[in-house]
Length: 202
Length: 65
Image 1 (tube, chains in turn red, cyan):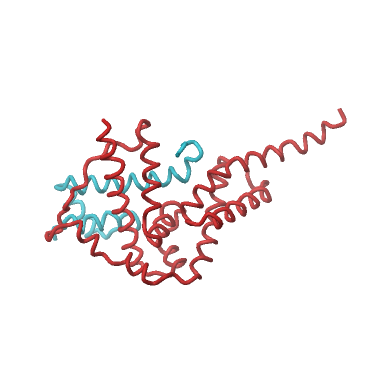
Image 2: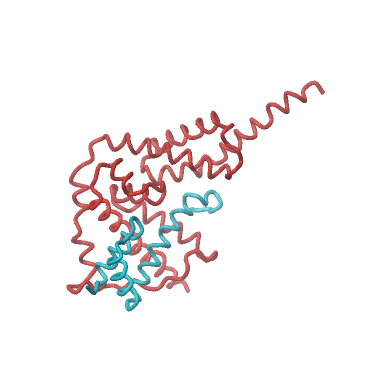
């Protein structure tokens, strides 16, 4: 009986800690995708979990725990991206990604698609969704480094274009080229490895 | 000016990041109306955006290999 008050005090804390920690692998997956560096991703997730446990009183239950943790992770990722941006980027790789010859080659001299985008089945149909997400993740991992970084800053972290330009120090025109390259490459990659592959097995 | 598919696909990407001008919007819509390939491209760009959001928010409900 004498233990009861202590149990009451400690139980919610340890449950909260366990709940937070249970999201570790999911958070790590997001961090790895964006940062492309396992050690850095581990660090960022560790910082996220520590921050979450420290500020547990600010978790009001208004959102799900998962959403709250992803919110903290986003800030930690942005901090890491700022630190990364201070390191010199091999200029040649960015120059290559900003060249548009390969994108122009997707169209004929009249600007018409050489290979027209085909109609896909709805990728959010429950039967195919997991497969679509798996292929998409692989396609993102195969994007060139700078292209992947800004695309994920836009779509995964949810920054607007001005914020991205400020963090990575590129012009808005260059950012538009990289985002176009990312979307066109992912579209083609999914066409090839998801849409056509699914067609073959049907 | 009638936009071709190359310009239209560029506009479709930019439309996901900024507000197009009224002129750009009209030209893009005019092209889309007659071009099923670019309609597919538009839908696919949006699906890609939505799917990345699922990768972010949907874990760990999706058991990805």
